[in-house]
Amino acid sequence: MKKELIIFIGLFLFLAIGMHFKEWTSYPVEHLMALPHAGAYGIGAAHPLVFTAILYLVIALFRGIIKLFRRGK
Image 1 (cartoon, one colour):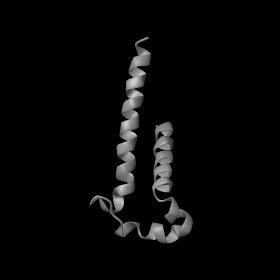
Image 2 (cartoon, one colour):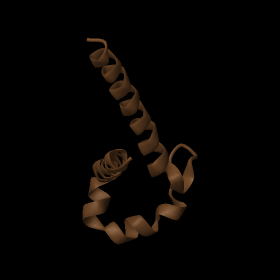
Image 3 (spheres, rainbow, N blue to C red):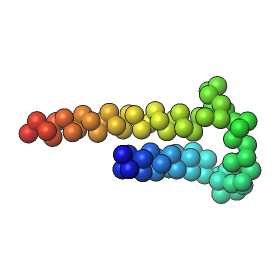
């Protein structure tokens, strides 16, 4: 559980900084304070968590498939 939480948080930080690098380096506090009014594709302020969860599930699916093939050997 701890390992999965670390993976999720790491993925969240990677995506947040990667997608909004200019904002995080130029004006991080203002960028963070604007989150309640932000929105992407109609998701609203929860969009960072939604996108992170989607990518995490895709990665978990690939990890599960790889684990199945390794178990078969």
